[in-house]
Image (cartoon, rainbow, N blue to C red; front, side):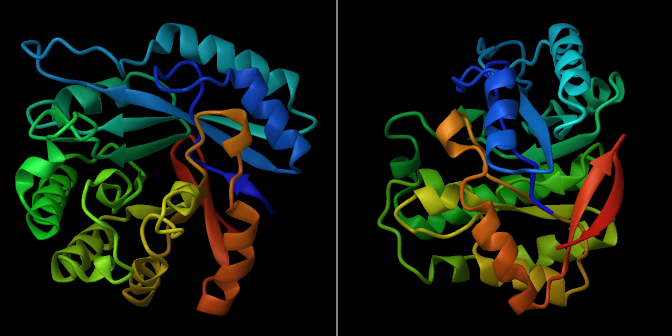
Length: 268
């Protein structure tokens, strides 16, 4: 079964593919199921940035119509990627509870409200180690506060945007904290994703690195989704078939799908 559970459309400011284009590309590639997960990043009022504010009143009717139109060819679910920020956890939870989402990703795109893509900001941490520590501590603290999500998105996202040179053993940085975070997620019935956008990065590795996915599995984690994090049609489904075929050799034989926030385990 081929699924893509992380996909952005023109309902996200940083995506150039329409929902219809994304769906038709997934059908062309032979996917059985996709979930559209456009951005919703709430920020305090004094930070005047509405770049990633999801217009749910337009989003749901548009996706529901396309879901029905393509029902015979592919399963289309309606999700969102919630970008967490301090002081906005409850408002983010209220947003999720206000709509009938199938699936929710919780991610970190900002450190201390500052976009990680702001020129020079990440370099100001001075070292890769300092940057990773700040990223994971922010992520862990916010996930501990937030409950209206199903999986943690691109757990080591910092690797994709950091200004420091990537090394293959970077996943060892803050590994003790990462393991603690994985245990906390598992105890709450939350999952992680395998995000193949990292395979388009110089590291050519999934987010998170597969050894971290393996550790999640070894610790008893069961809820695992997979997604390409596409923002344009040529990235829909990127690397997903390859990774799906690899997982059984790691002892992982099931992925998770969601309907109305309820998980179902499917054989690979």
